[in-house]
Amino acid sequence: LPEGYAESLMRVEQTKVNFKGDELFELMKYENKTREKYHAAIPIIGDGVRWGTVLMARYEPEFNDEDIVLAEVGATAVGIEFQRVKSLEKEEEERINAIIEREEALLAEEENKEQKTETTTENQNFQNI
Image 1 (cartoon, rainbow, N blue to C red):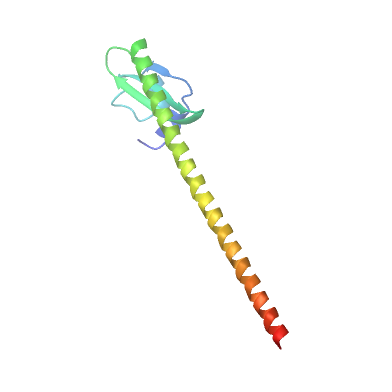
Image 2 (cartoon, rainbow, N blue to C red):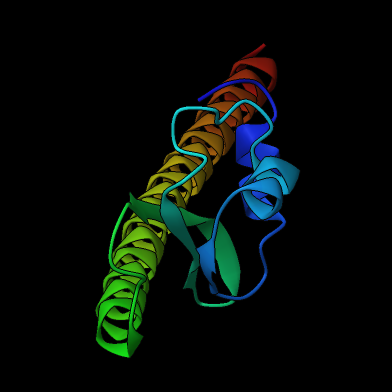
């Protein structure tokens, strides 16, 4: 995508249907080849997070309600999948952090035992003198 298109598409907050010509140029200023096509932009949202935009274009006919419902269902499915993947990544990160914390605690406990053993040995050696 040309520079600025992604940001411009992310500003589409609600499904926008059957725009072309000058209205298209407001969103995508370099689209000379598709100027006469009908366009639809559908936000991809998952768990309240905006992930992207589904962009569709065709010459004829205009997009109808069935087209848009299908596109919105698809965008919803993509948004749910993005959210699922992010949740799995977060769970994995939390699991790794828990392992690290547990290992650090075990190391600290082992170091405390070693220090106590050294102190006990030093005390015994001092008493034997």
